[in-house]
Image (cartoon, rainbow, N blue to C red; front, side, top):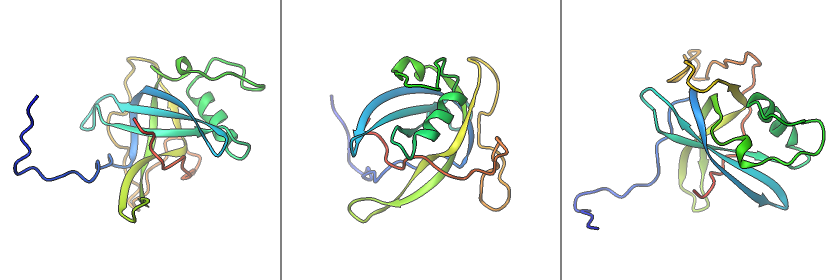
Length: 167
């Protein structure tokens, strides 16, 4: 396979989609461990609109301090398991699930000192949707302050993990 690189600028990363709420489908699932704590990495794909087919990631950490968010996300995504005891979460609980997902733009400095931007799912930024239903296909309206308008009405601007999984 041939590639013509003449005159092509080398990429330094992907531009994040604008902050807002998007109708998405979970298309990827990976289990990892970070500091001996289980982590579920989810890959989301925007389903429609100007940013259709764009992807972003979220991580659910299963450690003592962060398991509450994982439980909240599981409930909001409609995981059909008893979430009051020990439960085995698996790929089929997430992949194929459609949801309205709220993201913000996260600015960070990578390990080499380069400033970058990515999308970050807000702390409680999930609302389940039924497959094939209508819904948000683009960003939610801005409040005029640069902050996104939270469709959940809980005033939550917290976020999940900024580290994107390797896929």
